[in-house]
Image (cartoon, rainbow, N blue to C red; front, side, top):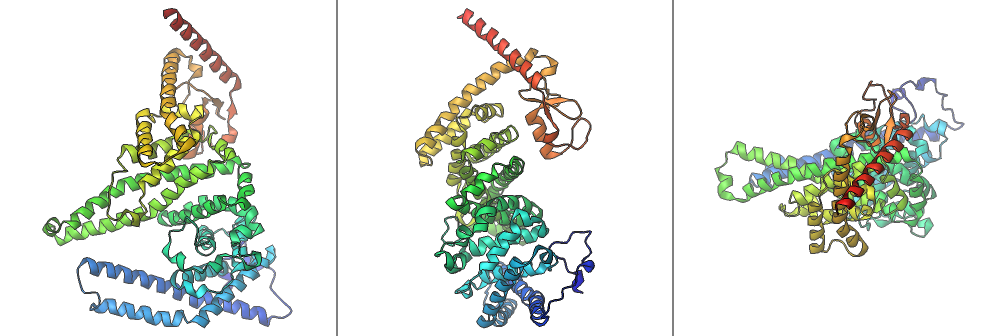
Length: 569
């Protein structure tokens, strides 16, 4: 039956039965290894999974009984669940067995790490899955049992399988996401400033640090990690899109923390600089986090008022008592759903905004965000967040115990305005702000709040404070140019939007549109909109002569306008 198990390197067309039989000189030791590895998959891993499900069930029962004001200790069903929990823990967390299991996990990782590529592709996928499952479960449930353990080869295996070279070796997106989770749960130092997970604080610091490298963390001292991990994590950030709505947010929050930790270290800076050389991959990553931020901020601003309304009803005994049990149950259930969604969305929203900020402190990365394919969408996203936080009274929104949701509107506004400040001096950003109605009034309101709460200082505050006037000037320029464009020749007009083009390109169908128009279209549907044939941005051709004629025509019109104004004065 083992031939039916998914293998690491197999694709749909592979026939594992045709692989070369494994015939070592000494079969006894390999047999012991494979039998032990299989026993983990059949016993320890499912038991850990069942125990975690039991703990979730107990937590839910506790919540229900508390809401019903019932005596938890005297409830027979709850007491039975707690008894099952304790009996499970006696069997599962016997220290000697756990230590032996963890050591064997590191041995499995060593075997996989040192194995040739040809043999590795035939290894059962569950080998990697089980190592990750066991380590993360113990780290979550009994972290103190990790004291004195070393997982050097687990780290090396994870970095290897996540690297671009071996990305095809693990095709299961959920398993690839789990590899990223292992890096976060075990190998991101627990004193990291981005660490807010309570269970990670109990993980011994020795787990994440390499004793052979002077106690440096594996993330900083491992040479393979220095070379490949930064691009691997950016790739993984996009891949976890396929893991499910709530799961992807949890995965991406962890990946964001890892990226931030690597960004702050000089050891990984060369790898980040190499990222800018792959323009196509970076644009995909950037578009992904732009889309994500828009979705997250919309979810948060929609759900938080609903949470506040439910909390106020439940806090008013008279109003709450007038509701029927059915209405109370419905409100409580909806509150639970909203809280769960916000608790998933807000941590990732916070970390994504921070990631935009620190990545763009690098001039090379900032130049990529200024590409015609990206900067209009970046400004649209920033304006969307600005209107939700400032225009939507996000700073005044109050919920009970906001920290449990990681709702920190002042920090969010600070991060947003810091990003605006980084781009404030670029004319294309000023023009785009004016074009999409990122109004000077909204920007001035944000400036006032930054001053009130002392969110920005120094050059950053000065740059952001200058932005409203720059956008206002850009608005006047656009309005004046729109007047000029009223009698523009038809050939200057975008065939899709029928607005005057600034960077015309020719599509495979022969039609001319503005570059930003087709870039936005291809994000939604990768086809030529005029004949519905598949295409990419590589298929468009710059309309060089047409662009020159447009610029010449505009210059002449502006000169004539300015001359008329001078005569009038």
